[in-house]
Image (tube, rainbow, N blue to C red; front, top):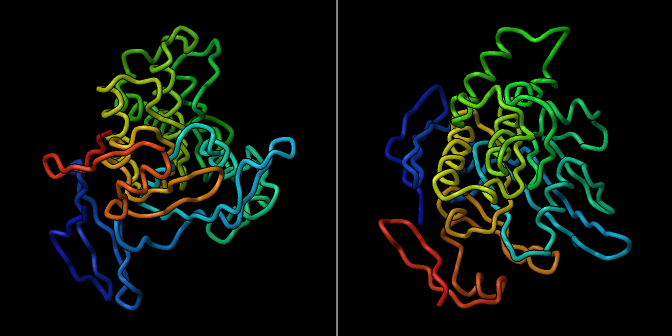
Length: 296
């Protein structure tokens, strides 16, 4: 399904598009007249994070083979595929939690291997699928997300950013609770909140809705979509739920056997592609202008 551009505004040699998503969010992107038209669901803009020819092994067992993909500011890339194809491993390679055997990871023009840990932390936020709890309050845990930006002390601005994020993710009422007392879903929301206050250029989320009920899944993904749209963040999410991915993501990377099977926008996702990757026949039907994947 193609995105719509309800307005086209001229401004000093550039044009500005208002862009509406399936979820009803509208934001603007500016493009120069002397470059090809680039946007979600069509040709993506210049990638801020580039994975080039990345391969990875666990004890000589190949997990990733020659992966190349990029993500631009203001878009969500969903990494899709069955269990064991290397989705989480690829995400960990993207911020050097795991070091690839071959290939490069570039943040804009900078090789991540040439960057310090603090430089990576200022630019790349990461939320794991499983998070360790500790004897810390929710507020203090989220405040840790500001660590890459802190000087000698925590400022009023840092507190304001944390307060706003806690409210946005529905965590304000539990900010004084200890995180080792939280449910898995509550802890997941806290960790996403901590990554958001980090104010990264790139956000990496490993199964961000895995421990959440349906209502919280929608709420969290709407917050992520809002952050991406209004703060121009490049976001990559591993996901299992194809329908949530189609609803919220702009582009899709389908993986099979540690390799890229297909990379496309929403209009390029087909029933044959899903069957080839997941081994199950499906129908893609439209419901209220939204594509839905239904097993046959």
